[in-house]
Image 1 (cartoon, one colour):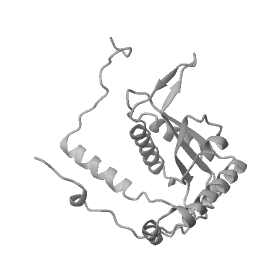
Image 2 (cartoon, rainbow, N blue to C red):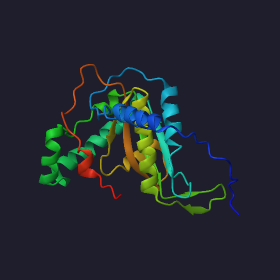
Image 3 (tube, rainbow, N blue to C red):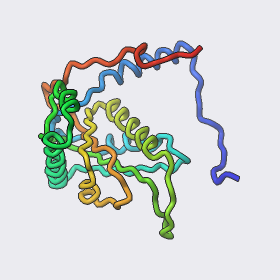
Length: 222
């Protein structure tokens, strides 16, 4: 017997015309999302962040374990501490860890070890993955498909923030264990993504990249 009662599905079927219009409308909206590295310090309403996080929390997850935790940072001193730690890791990456091939692939995007956006943007959201968790009695419980689950929730969050009119940057310095200490998260949680959130700086520019056409990444078996 399931511990969850079963209830009617809240689903409204649309006409084919509505489906096509909505799918196209969503594509036109989401294709404008770009990774931004120049952020404005302009404040963002906390309610917008909270509602985007609620949307992220609706993502599917293995056995409904919801193995994620989001730490939302707006405190200036904490953002500065994160920037200093992240830039130290990035300096080592660019000077020691990255292969020449990797650096060549990054070069057209204009990235380097300097990360001022970590202080400039009004919000950072540190996303943590929970391989397991403890209940109130201290018993350890395994979570399932954690990378897939947290990836889905992160995608929901990025999409919700874009739909709300905000820009984002997925920052993943490696390693990121410094986030556990700064954000006061337990050792069994793994930092997954450090998401930078805010308005783009006036006049912000992004690389003129292209995306693969549908035929290059899709196979239909009919």
